[in-house]
Length: 218
Image 1 (cartoon, helix red, strand yellow):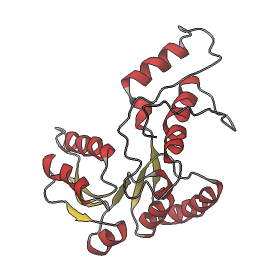
Image 2 (cartoon, one colour):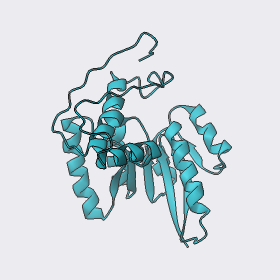
Image 3 (cartoon, one colour):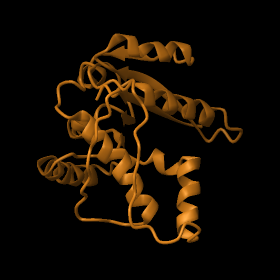
Image 4 (cartoon, helix red, strand yellow):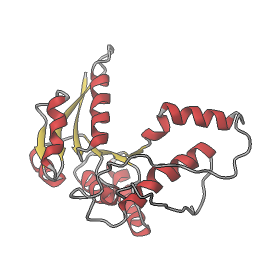
């Protein structure tokens, strides 16, 4: 049975979904491989509580990815840190000979895009894979809407409105509050990409209007 050692960069809410998926994969009957979460990194200590409650008590905890790489040798790094930090950690993972799974996107501006182009060349030379996770696209609700659109059950679509209903999002936590307008980045990462996917469109530019209701902390 092949074992893969995993390091998490970021231990926020989405990491819980990853840990649950890893537990399910490790419990498969075919036992082709085992995923061992050896390290988790987050600058906010309380984020590590989920490791204990979900049964990952042996996972070592670090405040930064560079510290984890000094102590542990992993095969795969899963990056769930905020979007503006993805290029830094993707680069660091590739330099440490890790395959990478990153939450979307890999870059948030043109300079970061150019950076990722260079990192992609290094990954190719090392025969390493760096992929972007698109978990929203596999959500049952999203799949149902896409199916309805593809089968033309809703007719022609000329205008789309989405509503962000969460009022508890953690935009003021340590590494998110270091970047202005984080809520806008989350819009384009999730909402704009989801609309593009549902409509099977690949626009060059996206125009959107952000409205802040009185009850919103954003």
